Amino acid sequence: MSEKINNPKSLRRNNKTNIAFKLLTKGEMSRLRLSEELGLTQASITQVVQELIEEDIVREVCAIQRNNTGRREILLRYNDEAYAAVGVNIESDNTHISVCTYRTVLEEKIIPTANLKLNGGDIALLAKEIAAMRERHCKETHILGTGVGIAGITDEQKGISRDSYGLLPLCFPLCEKLSEMLNEEVFVLNNIRAQARALITDRKDHFMFVKHAPGLGSALVTDGKLQEGADNRAGELGHTVAEPDGELCHCGRRGCLETIVSEKHITEVCARHLGRTLPAAEIYSMSRTDSYIGRFMETCIEKLAVAVVNAATLINPGRVLLTGGIFFNDFLRELFIKKAHEYAGCTVIPFELIENSRRIKAFSGSRHVLLKKLFEV
Ligand SMILES: [Zn+2]
Image (cartoon, rainbow, N blue to C red; front, side, top):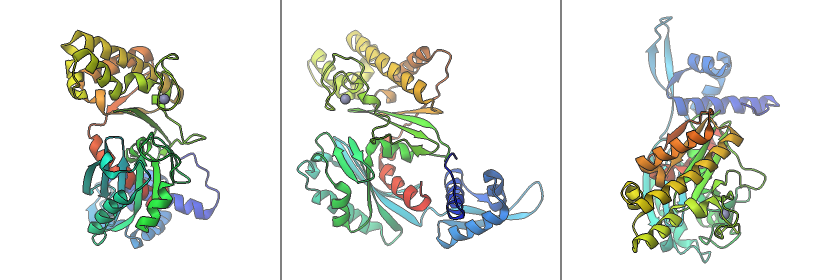
């Protein structure tokens, strides 16, 4: 970890977080194994583990026989059932509301965002849905709060949705209003950033997350932490300029990458060519049978590959995680990776496909709350 530990209290908190997160992400371990993995003394491990057991974050599960010494040791396990949070993911088409422990979706509901009538600033219907779901699970687990991921620019410190591109009014104090209605702690952050946070598997994780969808989202994680930037805008790959004289983007710039490669743009262009509107997945599958669509998609993928390789060159991520839209089509994903490797030259960029985007949406807001409240990360 690169963060500075200045005093015994913060050192102890950091050790506690490291132990809990190690058990959470790597599975069951003995105290001795934790000591070896984290480079901490067994006395420190014993003391901190005792605190975690008292808080019911960790439980002792069974005795194991170690092969090398023959000593019996107790395995420790992250107690997944003890704590949960409500997660909300608000995007232009659908809003996902869920109650999740760190590893398990206890309940999930998908509602067309238009049905929630948020754009006038009335969040009563959303609050009602959250409260009802919370009520159904609060007896079986301890619910620590609600995490809301919403498209657009957010101020995470103030809990404000600054510009959600029409989903909510500008500069909407979502955290404050929702907290009042629910009478519980609420956290607000950009939806793509929340989803990237849900994908962190190690406190030293280092990756770029790229999501192709109606828009084009991206987020950066370094040393296991989301990069925020000076103004909460780090990682806005979709709003890097790809054609200086291109179409006007909803962000106010011209020729943003999103105006060229987003699913929304692709379906509009192909609808003009075909004379009818088809679902994006059908358009993607026509890339090899319709020469116009094939050429058009190749152009989109070239632009996207250039942008991703340029971003990866700047930030040097350990992995690039891809999800949604064109990345779910095998032919187009392979074409994208082939182009990206061509442009990257001798630099190796490891790409990974995240196949279950629905599961990430369900976990995103809730994991944000659990990471903050239980592990202080
Ligand atoms: Zn833009």
